[in-house]
Length: 271
Image 1 (spheres, rainbow, N blue to C red):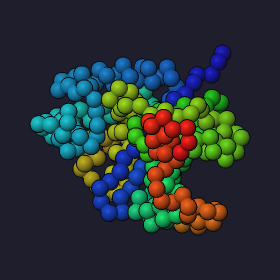
Image 2: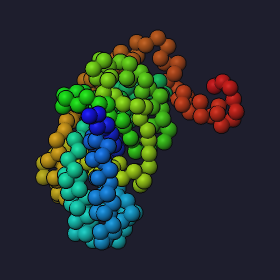
Image 3: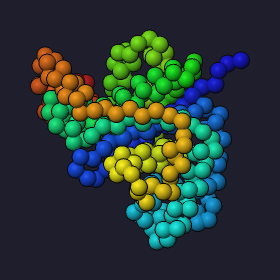
Image 4: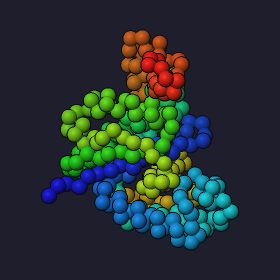
């Protein structure tokens, strides 16, 4: 019997304060399980008061689909959606770093293609999911679906072959096809990843008792693993990056991806 294929749906959450955290959370499960999950999530969205799609930031701010809602109705909807996640028991993987620390270290020396903190978090979560699957004894790779990130996501995506080549063979074997970026209003498991990412990030920025995370508290019952990229690691990475020959020549100006996009748009054969 063939082992079931896996998919990892991943979204990001970042705070608005100084010293804010950028956190990516991936929810990992088999493809058949995601099909069943999608049916239940869609049903929970339709239950009155209904919404067409879910974004935690809008829910907390009473914007978008939640404009004009009462707090109790908003919280009950979050609880209902959280229960759908718990019912299907995906495993979660979260990777996070201080955006402030990143900007003070990596951003100072990185080429323009790797200047955004998302690029580093993207690399970290792909590798960490594969390592976690190996730890769990899973024998099939997980294909990634990320929430659409625009140019930032496409810049990070260009490095996927290098990311895959750099890890040990047993980890590489569990890294799936080239990741894709999709609209979270159309791909429902991405909305669940959004909920989990917001909850995990909020819990790190405001540790202890926080009424804002009460409705999603059961997210913490999920099995999974978290990985921090600490300041010391960022300092070490920046030091190594600064020693790459001529790296400073690629620090300013548009990224390679943006140059390539411009060339295609203008019918140029070179960038």
